[in-house]
Every structure is written in structure tokens, then in C-alpha cells.
Length: 55
Image (cartoon, rainbow, N blue to C red; front, side, top):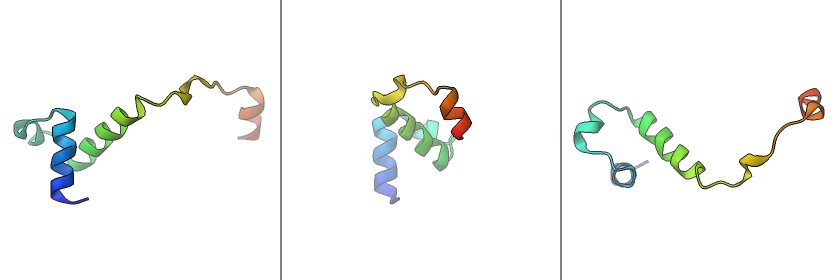
């Protein structure tokens, strides 16, 4: 990830430069990933007993 892309992600998350003093690069990446996952509609599937047995 390049510096401009990282800063773009920070702007998209609404983070300030002061916030970046408290956050690591990995945490910012995790926050962005979770924000993108919020729009995913596939979370309604629930595992059944057969799924656990296969696991």
C-alpha cells in the first residue's frame, strides 16, 4: 500500500492526523475492511449442525 492510498483510506474513514498518532497502519486497514464489509448482504446465513460436523 502506498502512502497516498493509505491517506485516502484515512480520509474515507474520517480520521484526522491527530487520530493517526493513536492508530497503527494495521488497525486503520482493519477499520476500512470492516467498513466495506458492512455493505455485504450475505451475513444472514446461519450454520447448521451439518456445517459444524463437516468442519
